[in-house]
Image (cartoon, rainbow, N blue to C red):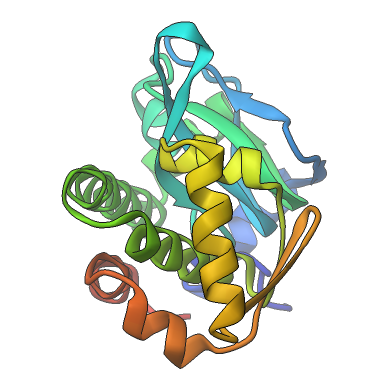
Length: 232
């Protein structure tokens, strides 16, 4: 049987993955789709095959700040699905793609029957928690340039592409800063030959250069994934 495009599913033993496959339905993830609402019941669990989902905290006056990202090596809504309660985050599609979805009740039953699957979901939630903690520390301690470089590198890892489709307005909202600040940093990085920015698109040109300018949070979060999620 072919491996799943989702690395989390691909890391499961073949017999466990075979038991899950009939219950996965492929859906399109469109930019801006809301897949989870804070305080509302979870109905579907998403295993991204491509694209990126942002977990955000909503503040007063309609502002949002990103706390974590979920890409093709993760899952959205799994923890809430396991205990049958509500979502603790708002989940928004940040980069379009596709995902395998499963009904919450079905996932809960399969997780209770298949221990390796349940253990993997719990391990992934530990990674998300660590990512959220690191994001809070990063926002409080590091410069906008370092945070933006870190964010672009994370997006590249989760999306599997050097081309990122997004606007400066959206990026500013995710970083919790003003748009002029993002524009200034983007101009600086472009002049340094690290990125190429056009309207609605960022192409990463020099990954080692971006890594040097990014804060340590990029390496820390990446190491969490390597330690807590088994390799495919």
